[in-house]
Amino acid sequence: MSDRPRVAFFRPDDERTTEAVALLDDLGADALADPMLEVAPTGASPRTDADYAVFTSKTGAELVAETGWRAGETTVCAIGDPTADALEAEGFRVDLVPEEFSSSGLVAALEGEISGARVEVARSDHGSDVLLDGLNEAGAYVHETVLYRLVRPDGAGESAEAAADGGLDAALFTSSLTVEHFLAAAAERGVRDEAVRGLEDAVVGVIGDPTAETARSHGIDVDVIPERADFEELATDAVAALDER
Image (cartoon, rainbow, N blue to C red; front, side, top):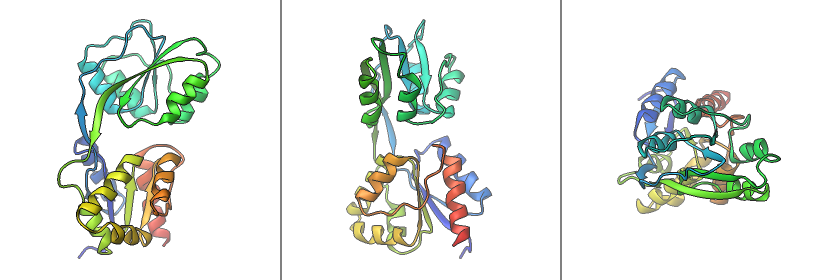
């Protein structure tokens, strides 16, 4: 039996899982990868007549390239450096990355210059209303294109059983949807209440206030919210919180 803490995370089963396992190992933790999100592309492409186009994820950046979309004179905005890096890797020019990597951060960066402008938001089907509402309130004409849907993979839920059995030291939630899918998987396995109780003894880390609000609304206490919406910071802060205990 390892003396290292056991830390669950819920990123999609792609290179992000590989990177997370390596990061947690470097931090001295044993990773429990339990993907709660699976990407189902819609094949949709953003409008080409927008003044601004907003991308919110690395996945969206990769999928939009597959559609053949071209930015032209559109101002391209990315929420976060990972999204910007992915867009640039696909050959797109990125014009704006807000200082705060969040929907509200992007709205703050654009308000004052988008009144009357056409703004295209290209993202998943579970995007926050904060972004659309904020852009509309700033006077923009907003259109949303759903590039992909996020579904719960078959077989997800090993982490819920671990939490229910008291075998989880930390859990890292990267979106409200990961919280909801964790709880749904726990319910399917008949351990929802036990899993929530098990998280009381674990360090629960989340990215962003919306995810924290979702967790708390379901009775999950939140211990760690990193300053930046970044998985490495989330994992580092959570393991540091474990060390303090």
